Amino acid sequence: MWKLNQFISGDDGEREESFLEEESDGICSLSPTQRMYAFAASLAAGLILMFLSLIVFAKPIKFALLFTFGNVLAVGSTAFLIGPGRQLGMMFDPVRIYATAIYIGFVVLALICALLIHSKILTVFAIIFEICALIWYSLSYIPFARRMVSNLMIRLCDTEL
Image (tube, rainbow, N blue to C red):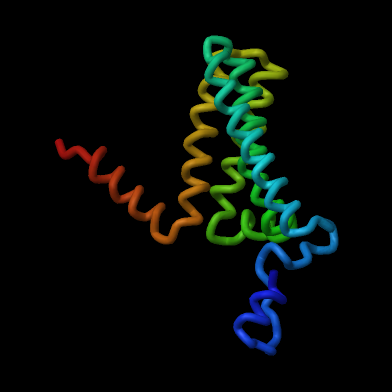
């Protein structure tokens, strides 16, 4: 495709690699098309698991397992696009290190509450906090989104006596 574009435009210059064509630390030897398919499959599987978790909402332990694994699949799907090394680098960037740590902590806590403790109430609370942590983590990728949400929450929840 690039050669066709080069021929049509008459460009003989050096080619810039896109984020799909970069080598991802030598670990991933998938072609750009395979990466897109893997991303779509992983994201779809994650979303399906999260949707299926709503069906078993009355059973918090099954809900927690399906939702958490779907959540991890959906978040991890971008590793197919940018590579696992770059994904981890972005997750542990100083801007979002705390959001990532809190999110991972609540994922682990939800699994512990569901699998080891078998407490439905603790599992529900862990899932609620996991959702909040995921939202906060996702907002870290949008410039100034966390600041706007913080200001909005302060305005909505601020009460003067």
